[in-house]
Image 1 (cartoon, rainbow, N blue to C red):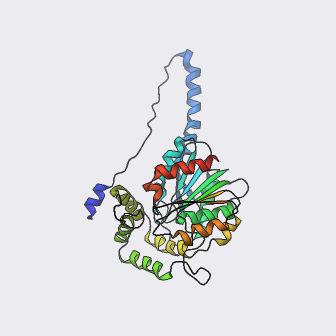
Image 2: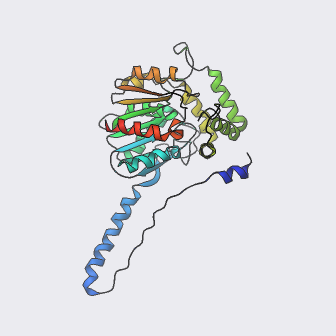
Image 3: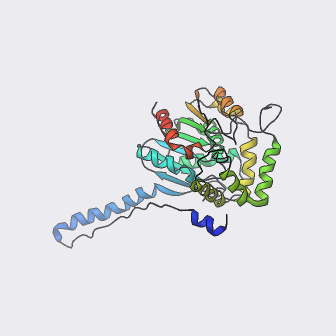
Length: 327
């Protein structure tokens, strides 16, 4: 794929609201109404500034980008590596229309957030989420994480989820309890696999990301797969927005972090969703073990679906999420 053709195939759809202000007539009888309208304008502007999108600056100066749409019970979406909040566009729109307030952020070093050289680890990721939640005054929130984002959810809910902040959690194709193979985790993925990820990222990050998106992530390497060039291009676009150093560091974070204790601490109802044909996060070593560690965990397996099933099959995943939210 050439640079010009990849640019041509990516399309951004931006929905913008345009406000129209009417001028007050200069009649004495309408003067009071005009003054009232003028006084109301600052309050309206302040209300709009709290929702839409923005940045939170955390303790080390990193700027975390977030989207915040709608009103109602908050749902916070946590994206996978090396993507951004944009990976949740389908779910954000779907659940806003269902009457929820929907929030998604770009993890540090990813998307529009600062391209960090330090702090690219799960403890810091969770602290960044806590800063966003505090900034947005989120209570009784549902946290939904995919892949690396599932690890972020587990760490955040375990460390910061008390006091009514979190109502429920969802882990989709998520990395907990721990991915890498060790004496304690003999069924895990050999470290050499993740070393290969790092080598490929250094050698040619753009090609590496294209190979993942067009291959195992969505299952497009399977015989008879219905390939979506749009999903491939959007995955690549999101990945290349982030910082190479942060992406490199995050491989260690998602593969070697042990979430066993986090899962044991989570007391809220947690839905574990996993594709039966997930080629990147093996179900036997993740979801099937994670659900046994959760106090209130439920496992739902989707035969034949891939790691990226929330994007390839939103018509299947979204209703199941909605049913869990409402239960």
